[in-house]
Length: 408
Image 1 (spheres, helix red, strand yellow):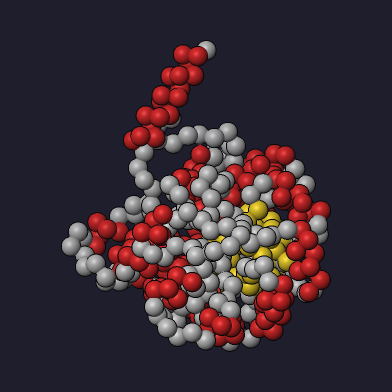
Image 2 (image 1 turned 180 degrees about the horizontal axis):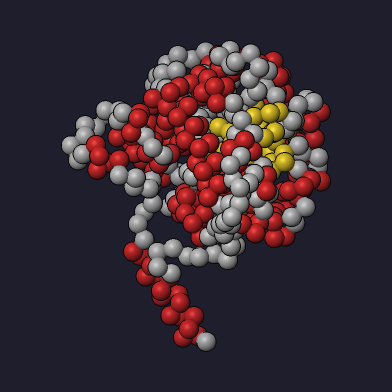
């Protein structure tokens, strides 16, 4: 028995030793552009055929500091790699002899009672100005054109919004927030566009309440509370380029604070950063409107689970949660088939972060292309999975026995 376990362990170790450090999948973009393609030059937008291409394009085009801000993960970045790789461990189970001619019409969905064209949203992310001078304006415009929700990241706060200095200290202090005031971002929304806002609460009650009031004032239809960032993460890659998080105090996120938050607004409250079945159940019990399964893009705690692993844990231990609350998820999703695995467990919509930020190097057109590519990918993969409607998907469309990669 011991020898069998030892052999298995050695096989795993050997496979991991040979395992490449995953960044983006090779779609042949670099081969087409050539080895001598100039650094700092934008590849043609028409050459972007999938979400991974925007990672390559951003790395080639942006200054190293800007790209690193988007790309970095926490610690040894094992959770970053896991976010991308975990989907391939669970094989799909395609069905045949199904009329899939209308599957494209089934991608429309509701999120918190609002209608959208696709079951995905733009996840909150900071410093869109690191990719394009119009920053978050491009994201809001593209979301409106594409008919999907955009969760605008927390603002700098009034004091920092009025600072127009570019010294390193100030850049570091504002690195975790939207680069433009909420009002400016909201002003470019379409007349009937639905968007949400993310909130980072501090330990100052007055400031927190003012932030909620500001979100209501600009027309946000839901408030997303990031509850997974109580401390300063150990982002070593970011520290190398001086774009790491600068939290200097622990932030207390408690159910008592949630009750206070709830008393300030009638808007739906979404908790972002749920990573266990226990916290998901607690959210239901406290009357939270929705949750986002997320490990913050693998930027806060190395070793934290991917959203797929958390969704699977909930499905196996307390599946009624998916019926009692709207469950969303983000992290590492690059293909329609990734999203389908989450939908199969009961996740209602998925979020896209880094590919959106990378695509912003092209402005509105780039962000719109990511939205279009993902919509098409979900539609085509749903058809090839044998779904007459996306609403028909369930857990039987996936083999939930993990199949390990890299020869294991």
